[in-house]
Image (tube, rainbow, N blue to C red; front, side, top):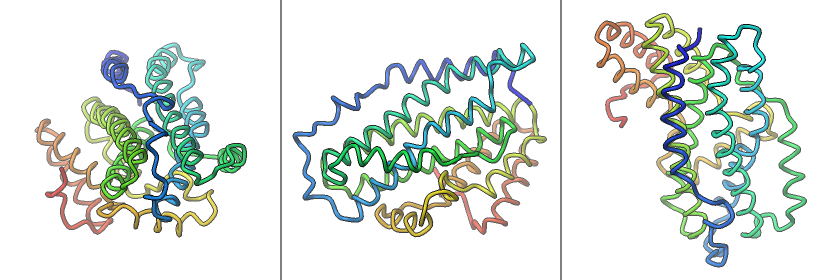
Length: 284
């Protein structure tokens, strides 16, 4: 189950057209001379350390995409599809790597970890651990990444509202904008699958939504406690909000595609019941 090449190319070109004009420099755009580490709380330092690990696992994420969408596929049609997707994946990987290195540089300059070699050693310990999305169907892979991108966008956005340290605040705004753009791409991809395959993809989307967990939840030591503490540093952050946003997007798709309105609403109702979500009406 894959998108027609022309449809995939449309979304990849649209993303890269926007991304090419949306750059910031991990070395120049963060003005280290303005850094005020004294304005950081210990909780904020811990949060920066935690999200650096999550962002820095990019080699695992990228390798997973290369494995799931190989250019050397036996079928030429599949190869063309995967090569087209690669135009997005490599750009997305570059931007996520920029996030990881910018956060690591922030740790170094702010004195959170003043020994850069030791910082890289700590990151590589997590980096070498295996990662798997847990799904191989393309629409499920994109649904998973949609939720991941929305979760990180919402977290950075919430954290930025309370961080007084100016350089970190600026960095969080850069990250928020990038993650929002990534979410938009994956949202378009999931919607395109619904347009192409109708209600048969809804159970696949449901499965991911109901079983979603953030990367590293099963590999990072003491992940659960650290994630709870991290969330406390970002007032207003709701860990279930990405699923609510996805359901709201599905509803908008149903409003646009009248023939799918009923199965989409039934799918949303099942997910809301299982996740004990009372309403998605207040979700933007």
